[in-house]
Image (cartoon, rainbow over all chains, first blue to last red; front, side, top):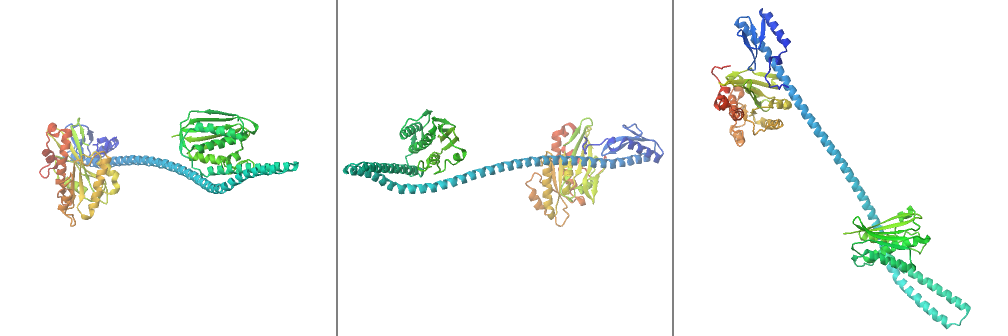
Length: 375
Length: 222
């Protein structure tokens, strides 16, 4: 492409047809014939444009007329040149503007894309934050509820503990008195019946108070009344103890298999962790009415200690599973369970920055995973 | 960017008159056209005006021929000063070897001067040139006006720039125009000599360069 400031050749300024027409017109005006040459042949005069000689005009004419023809030709070239320069400049300027426009367009597109991505990222962040807030709200709600329940439980436990203590003690003494009373009365069938019944009543009441005492103890744990010492815990040892305890309680050898992996010690409250394992084991034991095994395993997984307690018991449906961790929720007969076992277990694990997961299938069994992070 | 054609032994330089609207760029060129008697001088080409305002550009070709046969041409261009013609201004400015910035001395035009000077710097940058590197003369025109800003203030203001000393002109009266042109030629010569060895190869020293291109009076060889 020729730049607008390039010097022009004759053909750039006037097309060959126009050159011929110009010569023809000059010829008609002067009556002589004109020719345009590229070089001086002695009888020609130079045609100049912007200090350049573009050609040589030859004519059989007197000098003055010949000169006038050259000037006329140059005038035409001057105006043709002006047009050509303006056109070339216009072309250059337009092209440069278009290029600039394209660059700006590309920049705008790039920035639009950037903002689009930014918007997407922001939306994601907002959604993420909303999720976090919802979760925090839920946790706050639950913890507030648990705190209220805890305070209530602590109050009740405290109030019940003393009377249940002297009721239990009085019942034992009453039993002793009953023995003395029976020995001092004459032996008769009716009396014997009466005393037997009386003993049974007192024993039943006594076991009732024991049960109340146990529930109170659960409540205490649940409401954090007893602050056991924080210490390094050997989880496998705690599991083993809990298994022994549960067998002693049940007064029988349970179908229980242990598969304990090598675990690092973790800092925690050993008594509470034992309680947690005990509670889960207790549930597993009670689910085994129709037989089956309990498998207990421990391992390190994903930077956390895992204790898996799996039973082949009755399992539970999803609606029960969903409420299993609620305080005071129980499926057992009134008096047979406080409904605090799993709730306490979860609180203990949370206090150790851990968690409890539970999976269950009705009729197939339940698997509880207790996770405690290691660091 | 000077273009040299070895087949024709021809060197073409480009000088652009830049500045705010109505500062007198075209008047400068017209005065040069009538005052200069360089070795060779072409027609002043005024391209498209509307209401006497430059629409495209004006162009005046001058030239000299060295004893060794170098055909040296200098093309003097003006840009349209009006703000809206920026793309034309940029196209005219492209490949310039030197520039003369024609500022308006009137007090109320100082903002326009500053804007146009920034525009010159910006357009040079877009064209891959640096205003600090380009041979540039700054002329304050319209010294004849009543409200022209005082000379000592102007000189003080520009004293610490690479473009001091300024030239002062009253182009309408033909004053200072040739002086500005000569100052620019003086600043242009070292750059052209460095690239094309004018002194060594063509026996054109700075004085001959300035003198032959900006001679006034006396018979012209054109």
